[in-house]
Amino acid sequence: MALSRRLATGLGVAAATTLAAVAAAPPTVGAAPDPAHAAAARAAASWLADEFTDGVLPSPFNPETEDWGLTIDGLLALSATGVDPSTRQAATAQIAANVRAYNSWDNWSPKDVTDGGATAKLLYAASASSADPTDFGGYDLRAETLSMIAGADTDHQRGRLTNRPAAQAGLAPSNTFDQSFAVLGLTRSGGVPQDVVDFLIRQQCAAGGFRLYPDTADGPSPSCDDQPDATLDVDSTAMAVQALLSAAENGAAGAAAAAAAGADWLVSQQHTDGSFGGSGPTTGKNSNSTGLAGQALAAAGRDPEATEAAVALAALQLTAANGGAATAEAGAIAYDADGLAGAVEKGLGDNSRDEWRRATAQALLGLAQVPLGRIGLDPTPTGQPTPTGTASPTASPTATGSPTPTGTATASPTPSATGTAPSEPPAASPTGSAPVTPTPTTSSPGGLPTTGAAITSYVLLAVLLLGGGVGLLILGRRRAN
Image 1 (cartoon, rainbow, N blue to C red):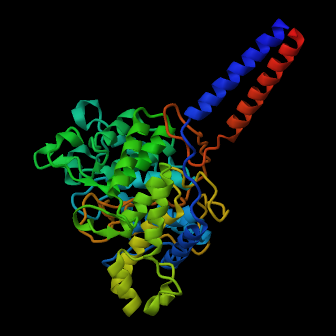
Image 2 (image 1 turned 60 degrees about the horizontal axis):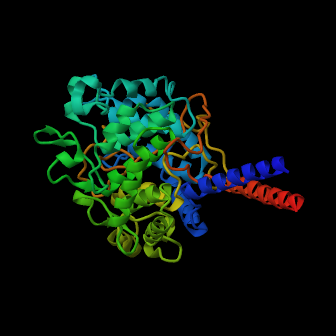
């Protein structure tokens, strides 16, 4: 009888403890997008895949020249939706064959400079496509990225991504996009140093938003709050939130709280129609900012707001029903309402096609709602396998002599959050090296839950323990009577 009561008491305490733990756990985040929005994302990716030629997207200035930043962006979009594996494989082979064309300034001035932002973006692309980031196109991108992290002797610059050699860092100082790529890439390729995460967190102001540039006319300011009139940027905040969520999953201190505050700030910036605007020349409502912000909100578990963003994005998409003169371009997403109206009336001309490529690559991420930290780790929405670096038989890698310095600043009206312009977001692509299969954790100490993390097993365990405890208590009372 005493044993029964003790066992019952123990089971009851265990059940109560388990239930309390379940109740205190953060809710599951990252609900699957609406089927219509997922289909819209795939339609957008299919249109974008048709814009590739031999695995490459062209430069806006010369159609004969490759735009490697945009090509990576396109690969991220295709990878997030599982669309067109052959194009993804071809692009992977091309990017791997042209690492130095993208991340060095060898054909610019000065020579012998390695661009930190481009290198970090390549690292993320390799990691997100399950390639070997330590041997991508013959380069150890993880080691190169780590070599460009400012050390302890740099005071408040400690942990900042720079160019190499360090003497050239001031020519194109890294921004929050670059730092976010570094956090994402390092997290995905074996772990991110805390200093790198801390520098990103210092770009966050007390309001929750992140600044794009740490630098002022007088030099770098130690933190966002130390910079007078710091401009908080939706695109930068969305990038940082996703990078910090990935870092939190990796166990980085302070990352989860900073990501949550960033998501709160994004919600405060959302327009009533669900859309977002950026900063500077991108202040108006646009699909680039809306796509990246919607993706970040989905990653942070803000599902209602992420859905509102997806609705706004779908309203800017050409379809067979609304396409008018641009019906043949169904699936493409306009940068803004004016761009959509112009295409419907006059069609999509060659002069505007680059804008549509950049807008579509980023916007569809807000429809697909696959976080940057999860691309390549979760099954693609269509169930197609993610390429692991096997080049398509039709791919013919071409070396290019026109490196595209990663964007740290941009005056383009269509920034791409993937790094071709300073206000650009990321793009990941399949890569051309030996495949690596990362083993993601479902959560991390103090971190936000991984997208789609299930708690069903914990609930069942709690119910079983509670039921067992109640049964033994009843049995004990009967024996006592």
